[in-house]
Image (tube, rainbow, N blue to C red; front, side):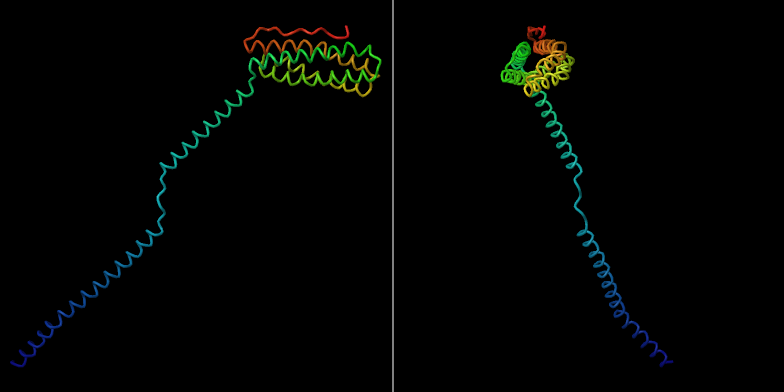
Length: 225
């Protein structure tokens, strides 16, 4: 009986002595596991943070886009205004164009009235050349008056543009062949008397009226009458 008690006592003592060691090892293993888990999550978090893209400021982008659009619209409007202003003749330019157109028309009319009676070929060619230069210059005057008159002068402007080539071609032909005066003068006058001359007066008055000026454009008598 005494032997059994001693054995039991020794067994309890062995268990009691081993318990702290077991607890210590368990605690160590637990700490190591926690540290490993913490390290794993920590590394993952660091990597995710490193890979993260900086957030986009949508408000700033919208603001920049709005500013760019506003500036573009402003520039476009300014360009349109500048172009419109540049294409609109002044009253002084219109008056000068009316006078210039009239002077050119008189030069051509004088040549057409004199050419049929001329016999010197050199003089014929020279007169036709002067008339050709005047007729060519009329186009720059017409452009100014057309821009000023707008739709009010569109019909007369169209007639001038359509029939002017017949005048230029006829005068050019006379320069090359003075003997063709009568034929070409007749062709020129057919287009010019009925279509161009009245239209010069109409376009000039329309441009003057658009500028608030008196409609004092000259009327041109037909040639070859």
